[in-house]
Image (tube, rainbow, N blue to C red):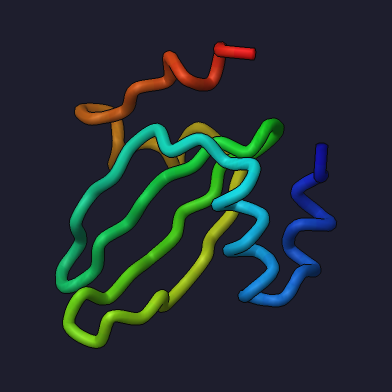
Length: 84
């Protein structure tokens, strides 16, 4: 299981590949012209930002703090986090 510090050192492409392979999608939201998927990857969360107009990933943000989960409180489903 990767630590947040090491994840943050990865390239954009490798962060995305790691998130898709090891992450569990637990929520999503729309913000302005972006679609954001929230993944749980073991010890931290990862947001993958996507622009549907350009069909490109625009950002990958990782965090551990609960404050960053506030935009998802109405939609979050953490049941998959507890499945082995």
